[in-house]
Structure formats: C-alpha cells, structure tokens
Length: 53
Image (cartoon, rainbow, N blue to C red):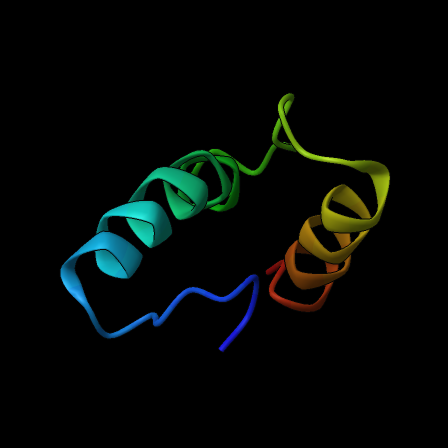
C-alpha cells in the first residue's frame, strides 16, 4: 500500500488509470511525459532506448 491507497480497490484502480495514462501515451509515442517529474522521464527514456529497434 503506497500513500495509504489500496491499488486493488476501485479508488486505487481509478487513480492508477489517471497516473498511468500520460506515461502510457509517452511510451507509445516514443516521447516523454510532460506532466511527469525528471526521474519518471529518465525511466521512460531508458525503457525507450532499450526497446529501440
């Protein structure tokens, strides 16, 4: 449980969708997420570099 949120209850699922949506779009577009912090964007860039073909 992170931030006192159960990821498996409905509220946690909805929050996960909101937080994950921009990251999913960034991964699909081979871009970074403008609303994310630098650490998250560095992980996105690392993922993209490892999956570049």
